[in-house]
Length: 244
Image (cartoon, rainbow, N blue to C red; front, side):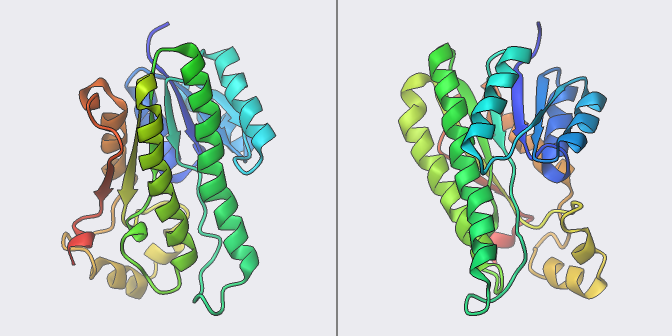
């Protein structure tokens, strides 16, 4: 069978869906993993891929999902750790600890657990592979009320660098893409508020909010042979926001 086996977590919507569509368009065999199994099924059907119901906060669900992908498509060759949540916002002194726990469970535990399961499979297969994590420029540029989310993305960056170091001997590259604000269903409400959108755009030298199509080419590049000597990199797609 042609094409690589690509697993995208949180693949039923937003950046994850766009990434899954881009890999499928490139001829790869895509597994769409999402906690919303019905949504994953709908997207996978459109892409001629497979759907996997996966709760990235649950190690048993992750291990079972990765094994299911191997059974149905073959061992995973490319992993995109996209599943993530914001779960609300608030200043550090006001934020309910339950919100912090939710974001830590999905963004940090989820990225770690899926990476662990897929990397173990890649090592056993012995053919190397590529892992691309979806981070955020928030890991490097704070925004009031978003500290809980930004802390988890800083952890994703750390997992990326450590993974790159530890997995290099197995031919597994680990990189991350760090978008600024992106127009997705998750941010649609904010983007439709002219004042809120203008406030975000004022922080971006290119003066526009990214679309998912602005992010996907870099994900595909980092997963490709053309990026064969790149590992441990966290590359921003932010319209220049980190410059100001």
